Length: 161
Ligand code: RP5
Image 1 (tube, rainbow, N blue to C red):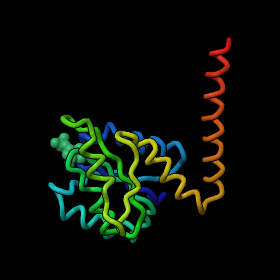
Image 2: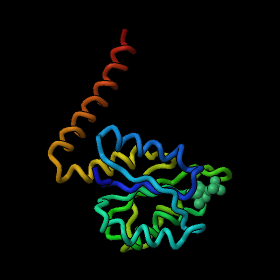
Image 3: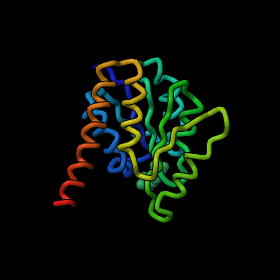
Image 4: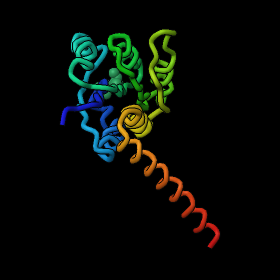
């Protein structure tokens, strides 16, 4: 199966956070490609990846980075694909630096930014984007929401026991 979602991150230290996105895509049966690409340490690799992703059949890119988190924004500037940014929690500023670096994009080059560390939501957003033109996947998203609601109701019932 050709990968439809590119999941990239600035460092292998981001992988534990980014596993949330990888797991969601797996759960929904979406093929991914996972790569470590640093905006600062491997800038040419970043340019090459971002420019070629759509030609290789990738439909959505999820990019996670921490600290001076330039990867999502720079990739967004180089690709026509939607880019979802994941602010990775950082050692000194707990990811607030990552969030501000990713979310404050200038008009014209959007990055859909999720909450600090919430790669799971990035994965879900990618799935939902793909589901806009895949009826079966849209059904799966609705089933997922149903399960989510049921789990809340189960907790409520437990509370009332
Ligand atoms: C960023 O610097 C990476 O995305 C990572 O979150 C952070 C620290 O990288 P390492 O020093 O752990 O490789 O570019």
